Each structure stands twice: as structure tokens, then as C-alpha cells.
Image (cartoon, rainbow, N blue to C red):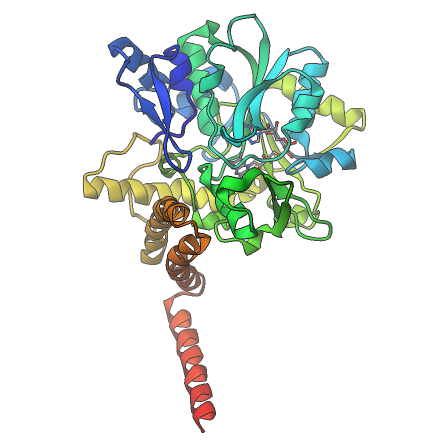
Amino acid sequence: MCIGCGVCVLATRGSVTLASLPGGAFLPVLDDADDAALERASRVCPFSDDSLDESVLAETLFGGLPEDDFVGRHLTTYAGRVRDHASRLRSSSGGLTTWLVRELLREEQVDAVIHVRPASPPGAMFEYRISTTEMEIDSAKRSHYSAASLRDLVNDLGADGRRFAFIGVPCIVRAMRSVERLEPGIADVRFHVGLVCGHMKSPAYGLALAWQAGISPEKCVSVDFRVKVPGRESSDYDFAARGDRGTSVSVRSADLLGTNWGHAMFQPNACNYCDDVFAETADVVLGDAWLPEYRGDWMGTNVIVTRNAEIDAILRDGRDRGEIELESLDLVSVRESQAGNYRHRRTGLAVRLKDDERAGRPAPRKRVEASYSGVTFVRRQMVRLRREISEYSHVSFQRAVHARDVAVFVSAMKPLLRRYSRLESIDRKGIARWLASELRRLAHRAVGAVHVRG
Ligand SMILES: Cc1cc2nc3c(=O)[nH]c(=O)nc-3n(C[C@H](O)[C@H](O)[C@H](O)COP(=O)(O)OP(=O)(O)OC[C@H]3O[C@@H](n4cnc5c(N)ncnc54)[C@H](O)[C@@H]3O)c2cc1C
């Protein structure tokens, strides 16, 4: 259940370390840690029962704000974007995450930003780094769908009194909040900026996409998950990769196996146990406004939830100066923008927890109860198959690496995906209409065969 954030390494000053597994996933190494260190690690790990959950932390942080079951505490909710086209083009959605942390730096509210930036092999392709200039911040733009660790920053955060803005997906923001409570001197994080999260991906995800596009894992030096393409819907972006001899490829993401987020390929197991989509412990959270009124704009639009009046004032000042555009977005639309995530984190989680309970598998304590209630038979099968697809994607990718053949991965995954799309179709149409359409399809095929033979 390790997401690889490395906050346990920070909390124990390195008594706990993180090992990298094949495929790039992480595993905490506890052998050299004494009981006190183990207890500290347990109190900050976002998937441990000993750490405070999102609701408890949010109560202490934003207790005066109204609470929504899915969005968490909220002050204001917006859709928005930066007005500078060149800057927005290089960002994932509306570009407001980069704009906001640049503003915090420019206004000298912070001295540096802790966030994930592209790095270079032979190490990981994405790492948590500290940016102190606008150029460094700009070089980190876009969504880095790859688990990244804070372990290498263990000596860099609290030493020189710097004030930070921190960017992370929900579980990592929660872990940072926990470690700051445990040991206030560990890092002076003034603002926590969350990214809406559907689920994390293991580092193998980028390699699997690059390989399908023609660049094999050992030659791949960088990947870009979100290249905007004029005229397409904002969700219909390209994937790009660079190889070691300057080769580069760019392919429509939807044409690559693994990019359908509903399939949850390369999802770490920890994400099966997450119930926080809107980074409920962050001062502000930004995501994609996946709504009909914004999808048509290929340049991308952010959905934003603020929980901190200072952040809200910075956003409104930016709007008044004409640098950014903001429209108020009602809470229902904010929820709607993450409808698939809602299914995964509420009904899906309830089913997974119940399955674990029945199978006698350990599971962390969650805010969602283990239950099958109100979940159709077909939906339950989908939740289980999704979990199977996740697990099998890690294994079959490693097999492909050993065989030096991406086809090993693709052909292993296809039968599971066919089963999944059959279930999706039954879920959408209902069993009776699905059976009728299958019978019609088979009848057409039989008539076709008779004609050919005739
Ligand atoms: C794993 C993951 C899953 C996501 N799932 C969803 C989803 O289901 N629905 C949704 O609406 N949005 C999701 N997002 C958020 C979305 O992809 C955009 O990151 C967000 O909309 C911000 O866009 P922007 O244009 O404002 O950011 P940009 O201006 O492109 O800036 C992005 C900033 O975030 C930082 N960053 C990128 N990736 C990471 C990371 N892994 N950890 C820490 N910092 C990072 C960069 O360093 C940069 O500073 C996800 C993001 C990630 C990383």
C-alpha cells in the first residue's frame, strides 16, 4: 500500500528508507528503524490507520468552512484559465497552477516551490525538486503521471529557513500536513497546493506508452503525457516521448493501450484505498474542468476549489489585473467535473473494502464503509475487473521488458480490456438490451457467413 511519497523518510530523518522495485514502484525499508521511528513513520503515512484522516485534518485547518461529502471544505469554487496563450499552451489544463505558484514567488510570500519536475535517466524520469526561479517553475509544467518521492529532499527542507509552496496529489498533501504537525521544523510550508487526482501511475506507465509509440524503455529519456492539439477536445491530447539519440515521437494518447483512465492500468495498489479526490487538506486544489461547456476548448480549463482567503485574494487580484479569467462554478458542477472519480472513490471503494473483508485481506480504515449496498452486480464486476487490470498491467509489463517485446504486454492486456468493455456496455444498456444487441450482432455474422459460403 506504499504510494512512494517518502514522507516517512522525512519523518524519521532517514531511519526508514525507500527501496525502488522493478517497474519503479517503491517499498519502505523498515529493517534499520527502531520502535520510535516506526511509530513516526506510521503517523505520517497516508495509508496508515495511525495517521489522521483528511476530515480530521481539514477540520483543524479549515473548520469554519462548509463541508461537502465529495469536495471537502470549500471557500470558493471556480473554472478558470490564464489569458496568456503561450503559457496556457505549455500547461496541462488552464495553466493556473503554474501562474499561482509564480505569483506566490513574485509577491515574496514564499522563497521556493516544492513540486515534481522532469528529471533525466539513469535515475527516475520525474522527481520532487525545489524550484526557486520562475524559469525552473515553468520547466515543471504539465501533469507528471508518475509516482515521485520526497526522500531525496530529506536534508534540504528545514535547514535554511526557506518558506515553501508545496504541490502534490491529495495523499501526498495529507502526508505533508501530518509530518508538519508531527515536527513543525521539518519544512516551513506556507501554502499547500493540491492537484485533483483520479489515481497515480507507476513510473512504468510512461515507458509503456513510449514503447507502444516506438521508443523502447532503455532508450526513453523523457515523456510528456499532455500535449495539446488544436481543434480537438481538451481531453483528447497527444503523448510525446524522446529517445536517447534525439528521436522523438508524438501519438494520440487515446490510440495507446493504458491511457483510458477507467481501466486504471499501472495504478499503484494504494490508490485502491484512497477516498480524497479534491485534496481536502490543501489550501487550494486545481484540476481539469471535465464539463461539456469546457471540453470543447482544446487549450484546457481548470476547476478550482479554494480554502484559504489569501489564495482567493491572489486569484481575484489576477482576474482584476486581466492576467487570468475566473468564472464562479457551482458545487454540483465541481462534483460533476469528476464523476468517474466519484464512482472509483465512493462506490468502487465500498465494494473493494467489502471484498477485502470477505477475503480476510487487511485494508486501511477509510471514511467510506465496506458495503455492496446499492451497487449492481455488473458494477461490482467492473470494480473487481479494474483491480485485476491494475495488478496485471504491472506484471505483464515486466514480462514484456524481459522478453524485450512490447507485444507481450499488449496481447496480455487485451482479453481483460475486452471483458471490461463488455461489462461497460451491459452497465450502460441494461442486460436485456445488451442481450438483444448481441443476438442481433451474432445473427448478422451468421447471415454474412452463409452469404460468403453461398
Ligand atoms: C497523477 C495525477 C492524476 C490526476 N488526475 C486528475 C483527475 O482525475 N481529474 C482532474 O481534473 N485532474 C487530475 N489531475 C490534475 C491535472 O492533470 C492537472 O495537473 C491540473 O489540472 C493542473 O493543471 P494546470 O494547467 O493548472 O497545471 P500546470 O500549469 O501544467 O502546472 C502543473 C504543476 O503541477 C506540478 N505537478 C505535476 N505533476 C505533479 C505530481 N505528480 N506531483 C506533484 N506536482 C506535480 C508541476 O510541477 C507543475 O508545477 C491529475 C494530476 C496528476 C499528477
